[in-house]
Length: 178
Image (cartoon, rainbow, N blue to C red; front, side, top):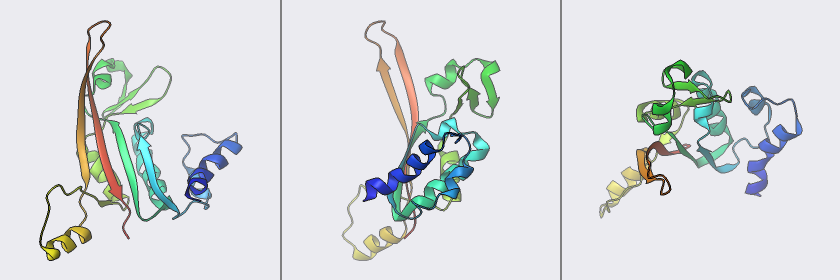
């Protein structure tokens, strides 16, 4: 059931061949998924949307989630090797670049991500790594959800040519309030 519900919007967009994937207005017209999805993933997708359209895209994701549903986010972080390789003339905005194929690349800092998601209605969810024996403290943790938001820094090496690649991503979990 949930699989069908989460695919309905995508299928409707594919049926309509005139749908422009950068035109987010078509998302609001479909009501089939509103409030019925357990989780949404935005994995290296939000960076391809222009900065002024990001809040709309996030609000659309928020609208399809059930209360308590999660949005899982990972995208390019500030000073990722991709950002550092862009030529200055490819810059089209603050931390925003245009690729040779015409797609955009935005490089996030944690403050921008936090503001975008909490501004769209998401609460902050934090994985609590410390145990608590106090039931009152546990109750407070449940009602006061924090944000899991962090940089994910990875150094990988191409074994063939010996080049190191320093990748920086921003990773977060956001929850729709109950």
